[in-house]
Structures are given as C-alpha cells and as structure tokens.
Length: 277
Image (tube, helix red, strand yellow):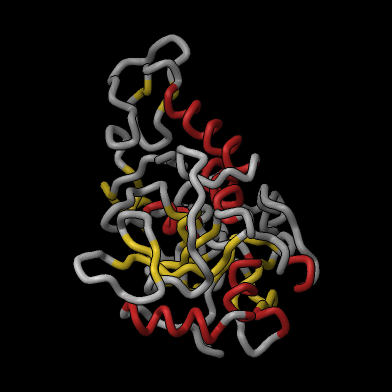
C-alpha cells in the first residue's frame, strides 16, 4: 500500500511558539520513516526531526510524489486498479473487504461512509483517536496571524460539502508543517490498525462528513454492528478542509450539510481518520 509518510511514535515534540494549552503529540522516529543514514549523502533527504538522512535514491520523496499522483488520478490509494463492491454503511475489514453484516473471524476497522460510483470510496474509523488542534499558533505571520494552509479554501458549506480529497489534503498539510503545526492531520497520519500502517489513514475532507450526514441511518447501523461510535448532533470533528486562514470546517449534524466553520483552527476537536480504498 502507498504511504503518505512512514511514522512511528518516538518522543514528544512541543514547539516554542504554541498556544499555552496546546496539546503536544508524539513525533515520528527518523529511522522508522526511512532516514537510516547517520551521514549526509548526495541527493539524500534529511530527517526533519534529527540528524539522519534517507540515501535510498530519495525514496521517501518519491513515495510522497507517487501517492499524490495516484490520488489526483482518482485511482485511490490501493496500489492496484482493483475496484471494491462496497456500499455506504458496509463494515470495512482489516483485509480490505467489506460486508453488510459482521463476518466471524474478520476484524472490522471502519465503516464505509462514501462511494464515488466507480468502485472506490472512503471508510471512517470506528472511534475517535482523540482531540487536536487543526493548526497551532506555531504557524503565524509577523503580525501574529495564523498562516493560510496549503489546502484549498471553501467559503461556504455547499462548496465544502463537495471536497472529498481527504488524503490529498492530509498529504499537503503533513508535507508543509510539523506535528506541532498541524496536529490533527499528523494524528490522522499516525493512526494504524490491524491490516493498515501509519500513512494509510487520512484526515477526512468536509464532503465525507456531508456524506455521513446524508446517510446517517445506514452508516449508524454499520457502526452499531461493528462496535463503533456513531456521530451525534454534538459530535464536533475536524475535517481537513479549510475555510480561511482562521477557520476550518468541522462536523455539526445540526447544521446544513452536516458542517460548521465557525471553529478557530486552534480549538481542539475530535479526529476520526478515514481510509481511502
């Protein structure tokens, strides 16, 4: 499977320019990410978290580029061009299959919340993995204002509801900042389960929450069968879709399209990763 970044918990990074109560999250191990050389090398890539280099023909950079091209082509993150006979509300398993009801001997890891009509879709993790800032005050301009992130901006819920680029958004965020800059995206990128590794999961785009909002009966049934946690009107989870430099879109099932943007990025909200297939 393609990866956004190879990440493994190592130690806690807390930037010097963060909001006073900002949550600190674990940073990845350089060696686990593929930076195994202790000496610099021609065309090598230096680890952002220590004095290690990746000297394998810029392998890490190539993996990121390959994933971005794959997602942009609409082919999903699966390395093959296979399609999936899944439907919204199905249980998604660690062997990357799906079914309407629980199959004995298989391990549920998510519930399908979106299908693109061409045999690919996205499945939402069974539970929240914690609460995180979307963007911390470590990324501010000279006047102390939050810097606009690299992802596309959506200034109304209707346009945000059409963003399904979960892994493209996540890729852009983790590639343009540290775990302290974009805690939510990095937390989603760290997530792993049976059958998946860190780098397989993404921070859901706003359209994923809209799809959930529009298909609540089927999706909630899937979560009940799989032993997961359903969204309610009081579930506030971050999407990877940005409104502007100060706000990003989050879930709010009491609002139109199941979305709400009056959340400052420095607020802590749930992260529920998605798996693209």
